[in-house]
Length: 300
Image (cartoon, rainbow, N blue to C red; front, side):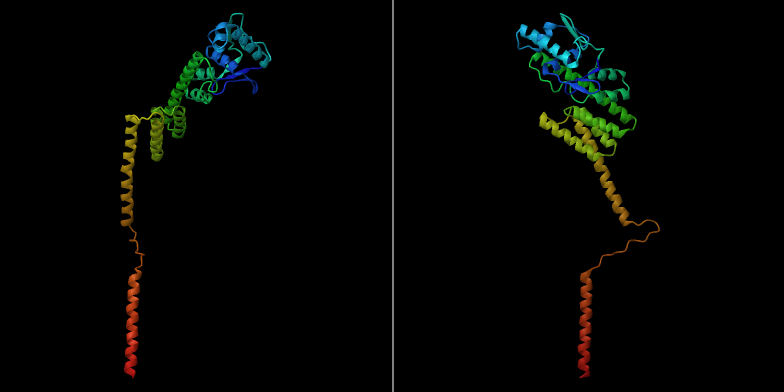
């Protein structure tokens, strides 16, 4: 049969090479996600049936489970032993013929190299089985725990990558990675602080200030709390440095206008006092007029 790929980050999808997606009912999505997340275990048919079809009687649950396996086999054009190892009592996922994105994610993280970590976080397109809704409390709790575990792994990996890029003076990549860090968990202040520091280091202090206020607004809106002391101290330090630089720049600019450089002539005053010009012109006109009148009177 064609190679199978199971995607568990974001929507649960089963595809056959090259890119033919197999339509999966919600219960089948739950079954595959559960088996893939416990690939080293074998489950009894009754346990899986009662877990996934918890609202039905034992007989109905077992019947629904059999129908699920049959429909899955039919949809991929082979018997269920190819994808799902199932005998009369036990069921497990066959890891030899399916590629699962969460498995690849954790294998890449185990390598620990920057390239491997970058490939791993690229697989994390969204939270684990984000589109699946569970009726059973046990399954819902399991899925929430798995989502948290994988999200935490991705967060830690992004933080390591950001630090690696910063240490190797690749600030643009460090900032891009830290932006994703904040987007992954906006309520974690350590992600915001990392991004604020990187903006400041890159000379983008206005962006650093904006990021602080973004953090402040999120915490107020979502948790009704103020930022931690470490975050506020970082903000105060950046504001202090901005205030120290700006007055110095103004003084230097003012001095450069007042003191010409060596070999330069002082700037000429180009402003014209038009009131003074009008006053002088008026006096000249009056004197000329008086002279004319005086000359006429003498001639008579």
